[in-house]
Length: 318
Image (cartoon, rainbow, N blue to C red; front, side, top):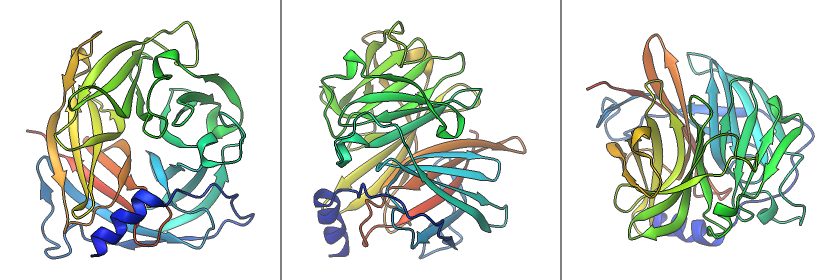
């Protein structure tokens, strides 16, 4: 019944687009086991659970996080309301230096969620930030720390993508190419529309080519980031009224991305209830002592029956 209620609210309740409070209210990070029935259970496919936290806060616009950036002890989470949260997370799980803010430049200013539905985020080597927006199916480029707008585009190739399931996942590849995955635009059964831009997608000279992405059956892509070895890690969500949320991660070889091709990722892990998962939408990759870490965060849709979870896994080699 709890799963059914959560699912119903997920379908019916949109995220808030209200303004953040002036003061930065602390965020509480409560450690969690990935398997509440067996805390020693940590291996899931090629992922090993390292740590995880249930994040809570009284900040008015806390929650709804769809994109994630982890760099050292610095965490940046971008919500689908145009708001963002930053904090430091020590190796022993102590959270500090919480700051909240919001994107001041948006694709439009109608005043509803449709003008600020920020779903994906990727970074350049100089710290520039590209954000993908649904509804308007736009991509905006910001200076580091979101200080100013550098570029904006409504790519014609994304114009017919579904308004509420468009540029859900985006990553900048080494060398400057960009890959964008649509959440809901099907080009064939179980195949999602995707684009590869030869350069900055906010520059109209960089015309993308189309390809198809076939996720694991029953899943949709929610985020993506390139691994140190060049492959693309893609985060996915499965949702149903009675089963709740499932999560899957697949790896894609960028060499397979060609005009008109259909690319299928290698499924490396699935996370299903009763594991501690929710509506996982944000992915970030880090390196620690030669090991590759995958961080994922959930979008709680700002409803009480869902949670904001921050989970950390190690990618195990074969």
